[in-house]
Image 1: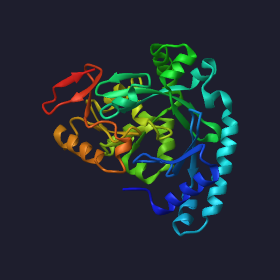
Image 2: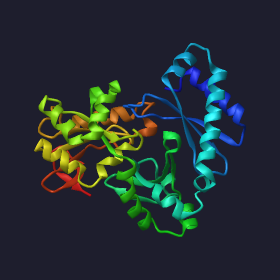
Image 3: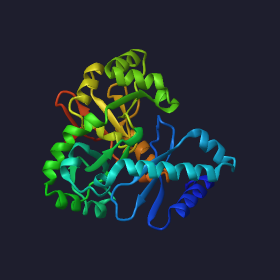
Image 4: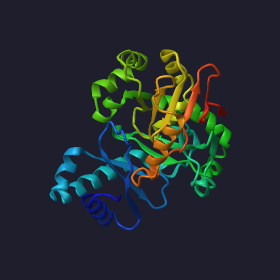
Length: 315
């Protein structure tokens, strides 16, 4: 399913205003996007950092009625120019490692089907997924990502192992984990989000005691949030509260769903079929993470690929 007509018109108008040296695209949003915003990305040729622009729900409402197009284009172009000036040349071209290293994070991406793209970037295998690396910046409260390329490592004169170690330290700091009930996530419940960010374990315990057994796990931005399953001790803390192993259902690169193993009413095969069917949807293909279902064994302290008979393939 392609973008709606109003969005295509908006992208075309912005592209026309910016000119051929820029690329303007819609940025796929998470299935559960607590920010509930349409995002547009603009990248200037010769630069390796794109800039994300948020289109608020109020503007979308007007655009869907066929009004406010020129005003929206003008506003977004001005936002882009302002944010670009805030980012500065160093981040845009990624020139100096000492200025970049505090912004390096990791993210989980789909490995199957991305083999060609992975040839040009540093990455680390994790189970059947790929851990890749990004530069992240948050000018004006918005978050921008750009993938780190093999060329970056050559310019910076650093190894993949150094990048990996830095990303392991930075990612939990720059992308705090966010856990919500599916209802709070879909409904954009800010009170629930604030409660989880303030005391995730308390939020989880309270709702689990009420009988809630399925939760959405992401980061505070809702982008590349599936990577929080790599945070040291996070799944262990959840398993300890549940006194159970944890099933991890990959919704997308942006978030996962977690379910207590013994509380699941579905088999591993049924969960796998749900994930595979979801990944075949046109709107989901670009953000699909994996066709597998994962299993955190609290006794072994390891995340693994779950099989039908609960035998596990350890990382």
